[in-house]
Image (cartoon, rainbow, N blue to C red):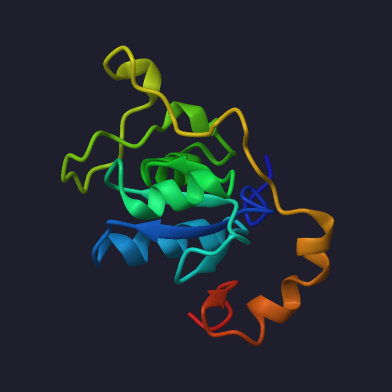
Length: 147
């Protein structure tokens, strides 16, 4: 059994939407501890948007960028399971103001599904090659080193 879970979310560049502190900080720190990179604002470089509310302009922007949109419960569930879980099991709800993690889709009402889960976008090799330029020198992005 390996104790190193720092690469579970390797390749994930994420932004958060609709979460307030302290939950926002907890989600950010949990994802970064598993190897994800955080963007304070949405950009087309992001692979994932973790949102608490459905049908928002930020979600539409993420969908237009072919990013994966999930509920923040995906992050906490990955940390608990100590492995990367299927994003499609953590859809964003229809706008309920919940601070609790979303239940997996298999436990939610019929008809709910993750947005863009099948068309999941990963950071490309060109993203990885230039990653240092936006994680190290741009204060909008973080790999956890300055948290």
